[in-house]
Image 1 (tube, rainbow, N blue to C red):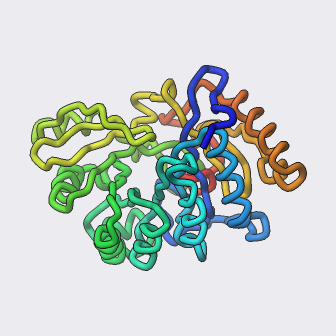
Image 2: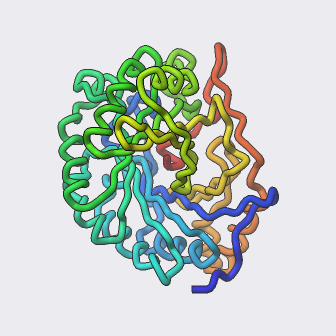
Length: 333
């Protein structure tokens, strides 16, 4: 397939990665992500699967090479594997190099085989604790055993699984080393993530925040961490953990800004294209596509790329509120 027009922003960064949210709903209420009482979008405002697929097709034609399906919890939207299969049809000669998914794992056991059949080969599973009491304290719901079963089913279906762990001071930061050990024993890579000031939550993020440089230094006293050139198309910087044979990724939007290499944009389930997770500027692709078809969609994409900022301006500190009112579950992780 010939790319009609490569995607690049005004700073010369090539945009090859689209994170596509298929729902803002989630069956957990993780404390760092959302409040207990969330207001979700009316279902009438959501893009249909057909619209999501057609927009994905256009992005791939324009130069997107990786698509990640996100949420909220993507598997909470009924029929999600059907959409995955349609987008998966773009893999190979269609121009798409990889289709991935991020999930909390609660419904993974029911859909792992269908995701593999759709062309998904690698997924991220959010898992912040291996202790049932802590899992519930963070997620405000029970579910650790369900998630672990889902991970087992994902592996049995042939999916490579990377665990995502948000490190929270005084909550789960004492579990990081044991998570490294567990991932090594299970054959999973692990990414550690700094909490980000998105949306109003019930806890103070300044009390939760841990700079991952300090976590890496602590891990280096127990494990041999070898810097790796491995990249997945996303933001982690990886190390090889010699003792486990697996990779450890650090996602550090707060302590070590990585915006200079940003290659991604995000589409919400109601059709808004965000050029940066940390800014509210967005373009309404849903209206453009519904009113003007592919030509209007292309014009809207071009306008969005021209407005992509150089970097986010996240800050966590005493007296600092959220950088944006928008929760992570709205934009897609």
